[in-house]
Length: 79
Image 1 (cartoon, rainbow, N blue to C red):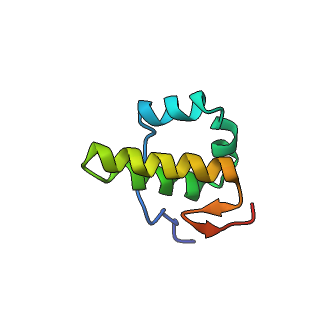
Image 2: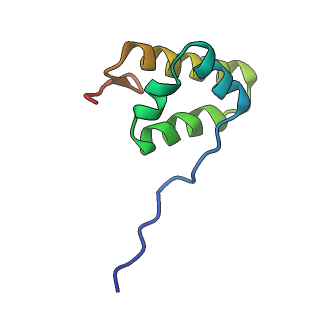
């Protein structure tokens, strides 16, 4: 029997403020088009910080990367 593969990081829920920002900027389709690991990484990166200021900074970077395309966590990405 094959072992069950589990994700290395726990699955993250999307906070309302992230959903709202994606919808307001018209980026939900671009977000959904990213691989599941990227979507989860972005949410983990936003959710794990305590300071609201830092959460918003991370959110803005995610939005800018989605708008630009070809970038994931400040790295070139061909998707």
